[in-house]
Length: 275
Image (cartoon, rainbow, N blue to C red; front, side, top):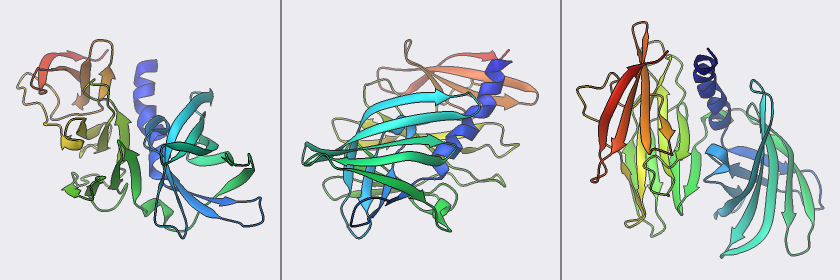
């Protein structure tokens, strides 16, 4: 029963994290007020800041992440190092709960001065472009409007793709950062509600290739034995290097288990009913 409850709750909790990105912050201390936008993905990964009035972005390296609160009202506290030119020039910290931020601060390394900040919200913020900075690649997408996905690489080149469109009346696209092929490098996935009742999510996964330094679309498994069409409610078994896809057909929930072949393709292992 608890497993089924968690399966229903996780997408909702992820939405609170993802759909509010980016967060706009305003300083409340110091002689010269400033405003910045902070972006981050799953577990604080892919983070960076951009100051209003400036073109460049500043990479953030996750230092610590701690969870507290309850199962139904989780709180997560993040601390990042600000990295410019390979050197730590400051640090940021905040606590996130249900899409809202508190306890926000920035500490400048050169003089140890700490600034307090607060979250500011403006009309239309939810429809803004979300971005991750992952492996020095800027990834841009929207949560609720168009399906455009852009990878901006460090050499100045860009790759534009189209994510699957919404067939559900309540469109909510989520971005997730995880190591989906167990090679030690984080990848990025995007999910939307299924076109039926919206009880599970359909995943589109882009794997990072450390040799080419590019992201490539993971081909969906073509297994006639599988019970799910495509990749749904994806979870990972890191210990055994297995990828699970779960969906509902009629009144039955199914889980398809896949393993990566030597060529990097997903191969079917087994399918089973969820108890």
